[in-house]
Amino acid sequence: MVTIRDVALKAKTSIATVSRVINNKPGFSEETKQKVQQAMKELDYETNEIARSLITNKTNTIGVIVPNIASMLTHDLLNGIENLSQSRKYSIIVCYTYSNHERTMEYLKTLKEKRVDGIIFTSENLTDKNIEYIKKINIPIVLLSTFSEKYKLPFVKVDDYQASYAAVEYLIGKGHKNIGMLSGDPNDKIAGEPRIKGYKDALKKHHLFSNEEHIVVGNNFSFEDGRTNLVTLLEKFPEMTAIFSASDEMAAGAIATAHEKKINIPEELSIIGYDNILVSQMVYPPLTTIEQPLYDMGYTAAEMLFQQIDEKELINKEVYLPFKIIERESVKVMDSL
Image 1 (spheres, rainbow, N blue to C red):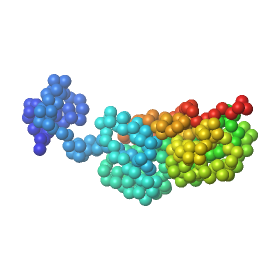
Image 2 (cartoon, rainbow, N blue to C red):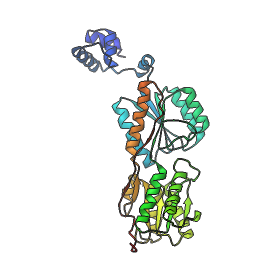
Image 3 (cartoon, one colour):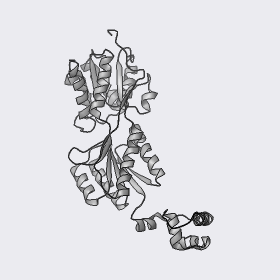
Image 4 (cartoon, rainbow, N blue to C red):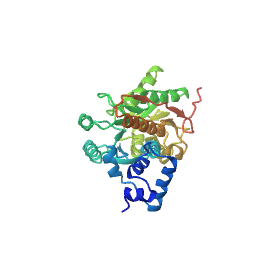
């Protein structure tokens, strides 16, 4: 195996100088740098990250904990994290929890054992047990598309309440008065409760009737939730002309069921989604939706994490990125306007 000593002999310089070049530390000329890099290339030398981590106390690795690796939303968040991490020469360990709190704790312990430099935690609630363990191991952390009501931790997300409020106001602005909602778990403090509240408050502001029967909840904002729960919502609210779906995946499921039942979208039923993931452009008709800037959210969370890693100081920063309405073809303007 080629060692740093072999590189030093080949470049005719000291081991210390080779180490400085490898770790991008000052104390060498451009000519020396080129000699060292050429020697590394000719010898096919690869740096030993484990050995380097013992010296620098860094592994150049971060952990990302996600509830669902197959989700399009997760894919876009990870793209933002990955692009910045790659530019920083960092590797990523992605841990998929299935939204299971025990599995989350197991992964936190695994990431500690792997000596990651920081953790990005996405899209679900942290338990008290999780938080206490994170404090104990003293690893920098940033929450992404989630937050903690009880503990002050840095996070990046969209204001779910305001975004949902805007979605319903958009439907009202198009002349809709009978508006139903497809929601995730109402006990979910991250995306369930605030999106339902935004829906209700928008209707209340415009003096429109709101009834708990007009909200049908699913388990996890999934395509199958949308497929199944559209039927239930139509039965409970037959006069409904529009739906606010709390995720694009649920909206896609609802559109699939509508096609099966020969319900024309948007002529007979308008739908607005939430997220602006790729599926919103793939369904027919293309889905009008609330855009979360998912890539930017992931990138920003990575920036905040690297700030903590570089400065060796925990930060308490709350970042809300702007949402916007993406108009496509799934919402009809009512004739009464």
